[in-house]
Image (cartoon, rainbow, N blue to C red):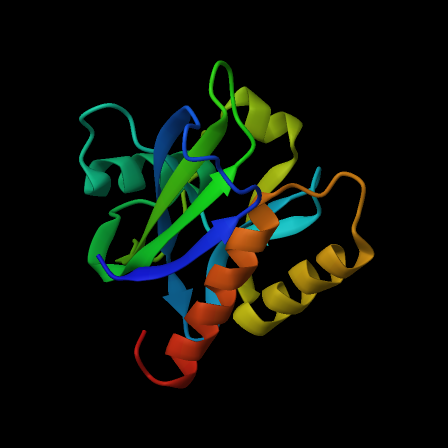
Length: 174
């Protein structure tokens, strides 16, 4: 898969104990509108998706995550979009979390079913929304500009992705 960008939230030492986490993210577009997740806790927009379980196929993980978070059905991957990797603060007994986000252009059924969000997603006030890509970028950039106290790290990755998607839409490559 084409590497899009590396994001450093911290610079890992050569001897760092690194935990790797694989994730998939779905790009579902209707013209310039994207199916996005709005997270009230962080006041940001992100692509739907999430962690890939051990030995799970990316297509199955993406279909599971999109169904859980947005109610999307009949998810099919049209093509890879690219990979973003990030180095983030650690979880548990590690020095750094190396997050690999595999992004795919997808098609879904015309109507969404009810999402089946996990408890933390409900607590974070996540909801699926169709939104113009430029509006989502402007919103996330305003949140980053304010440096909101509750801002999450993922807003950086998501804004980079949204800008790359907007460029692909502008160039007729999505």
